[in-house]
Length: 330
Image (spheres, rainbow, N blue to C red):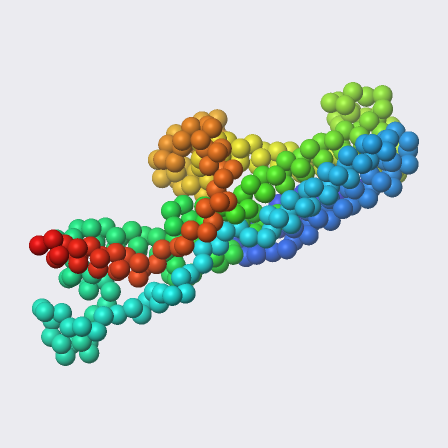
């Protein structure tokens, strides 16, 4: 019981330590799986033999645990990593034709992509500058890719993720466009199973108390080892459930406003968003399409996973086509 009571303090300390180091760790995922497995084992070995739980209730808890694990496995598969365009060599694309206003002997007659586009654009110079600035702003020097809109680089995982929401230490992975829906589904399954399991445990160890007061007042619960262990685990599960419930509420609010956690933090830091309820609701109005439109986009965003990621060479090709069309029109 002492270990279960001190465990949340140890978790918070270890989270602070790993968060400062920006490193990946299996500690939280292992802790979550161990806690879920142990609580289920305790439910079968201590609560079920007491006779206060029927077979249907045991089956409901079992199905909830299985669905939670299945959703977790699906969440761990792929967050939506931005893959580099293998057909493009981002940093070594050069033109070997000498420019009219440059000495051919200079630098072996070579000129980098930026200067070539700038000098060959003609009247499209302004568009070329805008494309260059956009490419530099979205260019990730670590992954060597041009990030699509709303994509971000995770310093913990070391990859760029489509529609990056946040890095979740409990699953040791990023939450992005490919696994955001299954992440929310994992939270829903776990919370429903946890709340139902806690209610069954409290009804078993504190049958004379009301369900909402049994967690705070249960006389004689520590007289026996079995009831004391079950009551302590119910408290531990309630703390975890409360934290994940807050996470689910924040996620639902962000989806309703078409915001990611990463975008919300950046908007609050730059003071470019409207916030309410102590920062629980954050809205920039940039991507919002209304409540129904935002949820429709969230539920169907997995269908947009096959879009190719842009590359710097794509910008060069675009500028080359624009310049050629302009010359033909003249």
